Length: 280
Figure 1 (tube, rainbow, N blue to C red):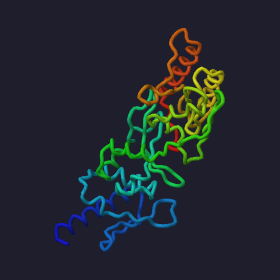
Figure 2: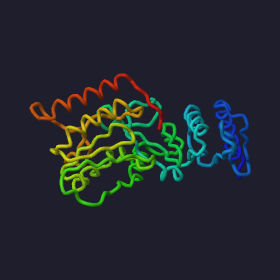
Figure 3: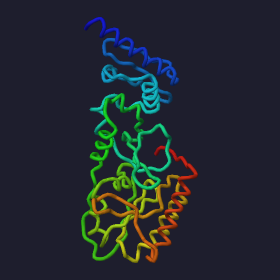
Figure 4: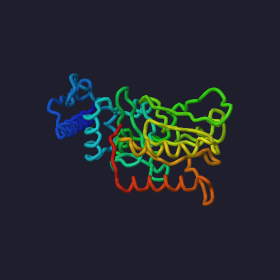
Protein backbone atom coordinates (compact mmCIF):
# COMPACT_ATOMS: atom_id res chain seq x y z
CA UNK A 1 0.00 0.00 0.00
CA UNK A 2 1.37 3.39 -1.00
CA UNK A 3 2.13 6.20 1.42
CA UNK A 4 -0.61 8.46 0.08
CA UNK A 5 -3.16 5.69 0.47
CA UNK A 6 -2.13 5.09 4.09
CA UNK A 7 -2.38 8.82 4.83
CA UNK A 8 -5.86 8.99 3.26
CA UNK A 9 -7.01 6.01 5.32
CA UNK A 10 -5.69 7.49 8.57
CA UNK A 11 -7.23 10.88 7.80
CA UNK A 12 -10.66 9.33 7.17
CA UNK A 13 -10.43 7.31 10.40
CA UNK A 14 -9.65 10.48 12.36
CA UNK A 15 -12.63 12.26 10.79
CA UNK A 16 -14.96 9.42 11.68
CA UNK A 17 -13.70 9.22 15.26
CA UNK A 18 -14.16 12.98 15.67
CA UNK A 19 -17.73 12.65 14.38
CA UNK A 20 -18.38 9.82 16.81
CA UNK A 21 -17.08 11.86 19.70
CA UNK A 22 -19.25 14.80 18.72
CA UNK A 23 -22.16 12.34 18.76
CA UNK A 24 -21.31 11.34 22.33
CA UNK A 25 -19.25 8.18 21.74
CA UNK A 26 -16.16 7.97 23.92
CA UNK A 27 -14.66 4.54 23.16
CA UNK A 28 -14.10 4.75 19.38
CA UNK A 29 -10.95 2.89 18.31
CA UNK A 30 -9.35 2.65 14.86
CA UNK A 31 -7.93 -0.62 13.55
CA UNK A 32 -5.40 -0.16 10.76
CA UNK A 33 -5.36 -3.90 10.07
CA UNK A 34 -9.09 -4.18 9.30
CA UNK A 35 -9.49 -0.51 8.29
CA UNK A 36 -12.45 -0.11 10.61
CA UNK A 37 -13.60 1.81 13.66
CA UNK A 38 -15.06 -0.02 16.64
CA UNK A 39 -17.40 1.84 19.00
CA UNK A 40 -20.23 1.25 21.45
CA UNK A 41 -23.38 3.28 20.92
CA UNK A 42 -25.28 4.57 23.93
CA UNK A 43 -27.55 1.87 25.34
CA UNK A 44 -25.79 -0.98 23.53
CA UNK A 45 -24.04 -3.80 25.33
CA UNK A 46 -22.01 -4.94 22.35
CA UNK A 47 -19.67 -2.78 20.23
CA UNK A 48 -20.37 -2.00 16.59
CA UNK A 49 -17.78 -2.11 13.83
CA UNK A 50 -17.84 0.41 11.00
CA UNK A 51 -15.89 -0.69 7.93
CA UNK A 52 -14.29 2.39 6.40
CA UNK A 53 -13.56 0.99 2.95
CA UNK A 54 -16.90 2.05 1.40
CA UNK A 55 -16.35 5.61 2.65
CA UNK A 56 -12.79 6.07 1.44
CA UNK A 57 -13.39 6.95 -2.20
CA UNK A 58 -16.37 9.25 -1.60
CA UNK A 59 -15.90 13.00 -1.57
CA UNK A 60 -17.87 13.43 1.61
CA UNK A 61 -18.27 16.79 3.25
CA UNK A 62 -18.01 17.21 6.98
CA UNK A 63 -21.74 17.85 7.45
CA UNK A 64 -22.58 14.74 5.41
CA UNK A 65 -20.23 12.60 7.45
CA UNK A 66 -21.60 14.09 10.69
CA UNK A 67 -25.15 13.25 9.62
CA UNK A 68 -24.17 9.72 8.63
CA UNK A 69 -22.32 9.02 11.87
CA UNK A 70 -25.13 10.53 13.97
CA UNK A 71 -27.56 8.15 12.28
CA UNK A 72 -25.15 5.29 12.79
CA UNK A 73 -24.96 6.00 16.52
CA UNK A 74 -28.75 6.00 16.79
CA UNK A 75 -28.99 2.88 14.62
CA UNK A 76 -25.75 0.88 14.66
CA UNK A 77 -27.00 -1.47 11.93
CA UNK A 78 -27.13 1.29 9.30
CA UNK A 79 -25.27 -0.04 6.23
CA UNK A 80 -22.19 1.91 5.20
CA UNK A 81 -22.19 0.74 1.57
CA UNK A 82 -24.81 0.63 -1.17
CA UNK A 83 -24.58 -3.12 -1.80
CA UNK A 84 -25.53 -3.82 1.83
CA UNK A 85 -28.19 -1.13 1.99
CA UNK A 86 -30.06 -1.79 -1.25
CA UNK A 87 -31.95 -4.98 -0.25
CA UNK A 88 -33.01 -3.40 3.06
CA UNK A 89 -34.69 -0.32 1.58
CA UNK A 90 -38.46 0.16 1.70
CA UNK A 91 -40.68 3.08 0.60
CA UNK A 92 -43.01 4.69 3.13
CA UNK A 93 -45.88 7.12 2.71
CA UNK A 94 -45.82 9.88 5.31
CA UNK A 95 -47.08 13.37 6.04
CA UNK A 96 -45.11 15.71 8.26
CA UNK A 97 -41.51 14.70 9.00
CA UNK A 98 -38.17 16.38 9.76
CA UNK A 99 -36.78 18.41 6.85
CA UNK A 100 -33.44 16.58 6.77
CA UNK A 101 -34.92 13.37 5.35
CA UNK A 102 -34.91 12.18 1.75
CA UNK A 103 -38.39 12.69 0.30
CA UNK A 104 -40.38 13.38 -2.84
CA UNK A 105 -44.03 14.40 -3.34
CA UNK A 106 -46.45 11.50 -3.63
CA UNK A 107 -50.03 12.68 -2.99
CA UNK A 108 -51.57 15.91 -1.67
CA UNK A 109 -50.00 16.64 1.74
CA UNK A 110 -48.14 13.30 1.62
CA UNK A 111 -44.60 12.43 0.57
CA UNK A 112 -42.65 9.30 -0.21
CA UNK A 113 -39.71 8.56 2.09
CA UNK A 114 -37.24 5.67 2.16
CA UNK A 115 -36.27 3.64 5.21
CA UNK A 116 -33.72 0.97 5.97
CA UNK A 117 -35.75 -1.95 7.29
CA UNK A 118 -34.28 -3.74 10.31
CA UNK A 119 -35.96 -6.64 12.15
CA UNK A 120 -36.96 -4.44 15.09
CA UNK A 121 -36.62 -0.87 13.80
CA UNK A 122 -36.48 1.19 10.66
CA UNK A 123 -34.18 4.08 9.88
CA UNK A 124 -35.10 6.93 7.56
CA UNK A 125 -32.65 7.67 4.77
CA UNK A 126 -31.26 11.22 4.64
CA UNK A 127 -29.72 13.05 1.68
CA UNK A 128 -26.37 12.65 3.44
CA UNK A 129 -26.69 8.89 3.00
CA UNK A 130 -26.73 9.29 -0.77
CA UNK A 131 -23.26 10.83 -0.68
CA UNK A 132 -22.03 8.03 1.58
CA UNK A 133 -23.45 5.36 -0.72
CA UNK A 134 -22.50 7.20 -3.90
CA UNK A 135 -25.93 6.86 -5.51
CA UNK A 136 -28.70 9.12 -6.80
CA UNK A 137 -32.05 9.76 -5.16
CA UNK A 138 -33.85 8.15 -8.12
CA UNK A 139 -31.82 4.97 -7.68
CA UNK A 140 -32.68 4.83 -3.96
CA UNK A 141 -36.40 5.39 -4.50
CA UNK A 142 -36.46 2.84 -7.32
CA UNK A 143 -34.67 0.18 -5.27
CA UNK A 144 -37.00 0.75 -2.30
CA UNK A 145 -40.10 0.26 -4.43
CA UNK A 146 -38.71 -2.87 -6.07
CA UNK A 147 -38.07 -4.35 -2.63
CA UNK A 148 -41.77 -4.09 -1.77
CA UNK A 149 -43.21 -7.39 -2.99
CA UNK A 150 -46.60 -6.05 -4.05
CA UNK A 151 -48.61 -8.67 -2.18
CA UNK A 152 -51.26 -10.48 -4.19
CA UNK A 153 -54.64 -11.42 -2.70
CA UNK A 154 -56.29 -14.64 -3.76
CA UNK A 155 -59.94 -15.44 -4.25
CA UNK A 156 -62.77 -13.56 -5.94
CA UNK A 157 -65.51 -11.63 -4.12
CA UNK A 158 -69.09 -12.46 -5.06
CA UNK A 159 -70.04 -8.83 -4.42
CA UNK A 160 -68.58 -5.61 -3.03
CA UNK A 161 -66.71 -6.21 0.23
CA UNK A 162 -64.31 -4.35 2.50
CA UNK A 163 -60.77 -5.67 2.77
CA UNK A 164 -58.83 -4.45 5.78
CA UNK A 165 -55.03 -4.70 5.80
CA UNK A 166 -53.49 -4.35 9.26
CA UNK A 167 -49.71 -3.99 9.32
CA UNK A 168 -47.71 -6.22 11.66
CA UNK A 169 -44.68 -3.97 11.23
CA UNK A 170 -43.29 -5.80 8.22
CA UNK A 171 -45.95 -5.61 5.51
CA UNK A 172 -45.83 -1.86 4.70
CA UNK A 173 -49.43 -2.01 3.49
CA UNK A 174 -49.98 1.73 3.09
CA UNK A 175 -46.72 1.92 1.13
CA UNK A 176 -48.28 -0.37 -1.50
CA UNK A 177 -50.24 2.67 -2.69
CA UNK A 178 -46.91 3.92 -4.09
CA UNK A 179 -46.62 0.92 -6.43
CA UNK A 180 -47.95 1.39 -9.94
CA UNK A 181 -50.91 -0.84 -10.84
CA UNK A 182 -51.08 -2.48 -7.40
CA UNK A 183 -54.36 -0.97 -6.24
CA UNK A 184 -56.15 -1.70 -9.50
CA UNK A 185 -55.26 -5.39 -9.23
CA UNK A 186 -57.51 -5.73 -6.16
CA UNK A 187 -60.69 -5.39 -8.25
CA UNK A 188 -61.61 -9.08 -8.08
CA UNK A 189 -61.01 -9.21 -4.34
CA UNK A 190 -63.23 -6.21 -3.48
CA UNK A 191 -65.88 -6.72 -6.14
CA UNK A 192 -65.33 -3.65 -8.28
CA UNK A 193 -63.03 -0.71 -8.97
CA UNK A 194 -60.91 -0.47 -5.78
CA UNK A 195 -61.10 2.60 -3.55
CA UNK A 196 -58.52 2.73 -0.75
CA UNK A 197 -58.16 4.59 2.54
CA UNK A 198 -54.94 4.88 4.55
CA UNK A 199 -56.11 6.63 7.72
CA UNK A 200 -53.03 5.71 9.73
CA UNK A 201 -49.67 4.14 9.04
CA UNK A 202 -50.65 0.59 9.90
CA UNK A 203 -54.13 0.42 8.35
CA UNK A 204 -55.29 0.16 4.73
CA UNK A 205 -59.01 -0.16 3.92
CA UNK A 206 -60.18 -1.07 0.41
CA UNK A 207 -63.67 -1.46 -1.04
CA UNK A 208 -65.36 -1.10 -4.43
CA UNK A 209 -66.41 2.18 -5.97
CA UNK A 210 -70.17 2.55 -5.93
CA UNK A 211 -70.64 0.00 -3.17
CA UNK A 212 -72.84 0.57 -0.15
CA UNK A 213 -69.70 0.27 2.00
CA UNK A 214 -68.00 3.36 0.61
CA UNK A 215 -69.83 6.15 2.52
CA UNK A 216 -69.29 4.31 5.79
CA UNK A 217 -65.57 3.93 5.08
CA UNK A 218 -65.22 7.71 4.80
CA UNK A 219 -66.58 7.99 8.35
CA UNK A 220 -64.47 5.08 9.61
CA UNK A 221 -61.30 6.47 8.03
CA UNK A 222 -61.93 9.88 9.57
CA UNK A 223 -62.40 8.40 13.02
CA UNK A 224 -59.17 6.38 12.79
CA UNK A 225 -57.32 9.40 11.40
CA UNK A 226 -58.48 11.68 14.22
CA UNK A 227 -57.72 9.19 16.99
CA UNK A 228 -54.42 7.74 15.82
CA UNK A 229 -51.02 8.99 16.98
CA UNK A 230 -49.77 7.76 13.60
CA UNK A 231 -52.37 9.50 11.45
CA UNK A 232 -51.82 9.50 7.69
CA UNK A 233 -54.84 10.57 5.64
CA UNK A 234 -58.66 10.48 5.81
CA UNK A 235 -58.95 10.76 2.01
CA UNK A 236 -59.96 8.08 -0.49
CA UNK A 237 -57.67 6.98 -3.32
CA UNK A 238 -58.01 5.15 -6.64
CA UNK A 239 -55.78 4.19 -9.58
CA UNK A 240 -55.66 6.43 -12.64
CA UNK A 241 -55.35 5.26 -16.26
CA UNK A 242 -51.60 4.84 -15.80
CA UNK A 243 -51.90 2.71 -12.67
CA UNK A 244 -50.78 5.51 -10.34
CA UNK A 245 -52.61 6.18 -7.09
CA UNK A 246 -54.53 9.47 -7.10
CA UNK A 247 -57.20 11.07 -4.87
CA UNK A 248 -60.76 9.86 -5.38
CA UNK A 249 -62.71 12.45 -7.37
CA UNK A 250 -66.36 13.32 -6.71
CA UNK A 251 -67.47 16.48 -8.55
CA UNK A 252 -70.27 18.74 -7.31
CA UNK A 253 -73.54 16.90 -7.51
CA UNK A 254 -71.95 13.53 -6.87
CA UNK A 255 -73.45 11.83 -3.77
CA UNK A 256 -70.00 11.56 -2.17
CA UNK A 257 -68.86 15.09 -2.97
CA UNK A 258 -69.45 16.43 0.59
CA UNK A 259 -67.50 13.51 2.10
CA UNK A 260 -64.61 13.94 -0.33
CA UNK A 261 -64.38 17.66 0.36
CA UNK A 262 -64.57 17.09 4.13
CA UNK A 263 -61.69 14.59 3.98
CA UNK A 264 -59.60 16.94 1.83
CA UNK A 265 -60.15 19.83 4.23
CA UNK A 266 -59.32 17.71 7.26
CA UNK A 267 -56.04 16.55 5.75
CA UNK A 268 -55.01 20.07 4.77
CA UNK A 269 -55.77 21.40 8.27
CA UNK A 270 -53.80 18.55 9.81
CA UNK A 271 -50.85 19.25 7.52
CA UNK A 272 -50.89 22.98 8.18
CA UNK A 273 -50.65 22.38 11.90
CA UNK A 274 -47.26 20.86 11.20
CA UNK A 275 -47.86 17.78 13.33
CA UNK A 276 -44.68 15.72 13.48
CA UNK A 277 -45.08 12.11 14.51
CA UNK A 278 -42.49 9.62 15.62
CA UNK A 279 -40.42 7.79 13.08
CA UNK A 280 -42.15 4.44 13.45
